[in-house]
Image (cartoon, rainbow, N blue to C red):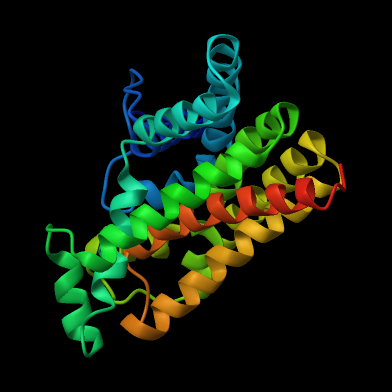
Length: 262
């Protein structure tokens, strides 16, 4: 029995889930979230499962839109719903990361990223990402599109976990990104990987595994590139990895469909 007043493990797990849902989506679930600057890192084990729940909601939304709209318009509306449900938080991280690339050295790049205004690189990056995501979805036949909608959010929300373990924070000991990276454990990364593998295998065997690998690979490449340019990763860089992971998974699904492997 724990000490009087100490939180029970089950209670901490539920608080971790609440923390993850509130951060990754606009859904304000009731209950108490985790406390402290490392709260998000301690809740990171829930990220892939929250992604699966988001994918399930997108699957349902697509079913509804497909009844009343053309496939092309349904794909667009699902993508809009997708980004609205996440509050655009990872789009913001991507835009800030791309804007930072205009600096001449890591210090200047980090200073640019702290500026809340969006620059040309950030705007262009968002346009390219959204257009590519839309076209990838629009090219998929209905049944395969729904599988992609289920899996891509899982893959995207897993991507920050291995990056947090593989790269150093750009500003050690400062910022939410550094706290997140410090709190993510190898066990969290491993459990998240099992969730991704299980989801990919069930949703579309064996091509779901290829889609997951494509998403993680693209996110890893982006993380490595940003780490070299910034001297480490920031919270914005980890958010950008979510978008890269989702896009990589969608592109892999589009390739599988184009090559008529399914």
